[in-house]
Length: 312
Ligand code: 13P
Ligand code: SF4
Image (cartoon, rainbow, N blue to C red; front, side, top):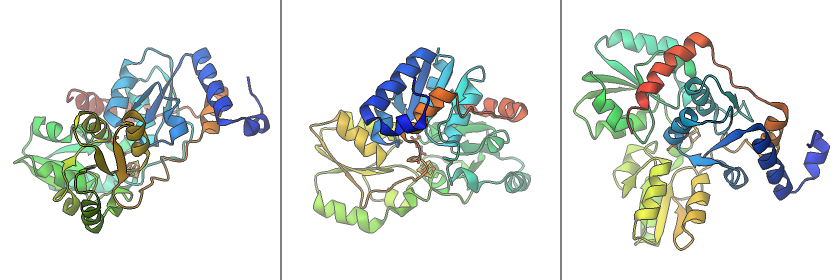
């Protein structure tokens, strides 16, 4: 076993990846990886997926240890859904700025102003907020969750763009929180117009975290796994991808006969890129960093997450 960081520093990518795989097998650890992670981390994945898929796989896992390569709310979600497992998050400072945009006091005040409303939280929220809501959702089941919940008024936190996307498909009144993803907000209408001119035959697909003016003029809106399915099933040969650039690597690798381009300049989520091979190696060597969620918060948040998993 490599116990010394200096030795780890001198290893090639292949050696380090092989060492991680060996350690993961020794410890019977499942490596879950989000679609935005860097290519070397994607290559380690037992399961590579979007947030809903990874949440579901955490529940189904038979291994006692999960190494979660994604941002913190995803690792906490795995721990809440699989409390008996050891969940390791290799970089605990990899958070999601959008998740930090909701504060409990503000949410409670909004609930008090709308006593008949139920609260739907995008899974991109911190655990204490999940504990305060009726049900969670991800970008791949948000419309179904809102339609399925027993209320005509829905407070939707934190992403105002996902809220406005859902509003297009429901008669219910959505009361949005003013949060947003700083990465997806950088896509522009001018970028859409430019790619349409340059690649007139391409399918333009974007994440629902993009601004409504973008959603109005593109071809498809999907979660990251939704884009993987679109790329596989479509007859098109060229695709314009309006989400974090890590997904483009996966799309190109899985569809070598098709072409994938970022919508405008590549958009990078710095938090998703924090996890490097050395962090995963150290996570397995040192059993770090173990995700812990306060028991009361976890019990309440679990209800909202279990409910989310009823919506495929
Ligand atoms: P997905 O659930 O589509 O993977 O999205 C997660 C995310 O953080 C988008 O920015
Ligand atoms: Fe959060 Fe946006 Fe990064 Fe997704 S891309 S993790 S929503 S900051």
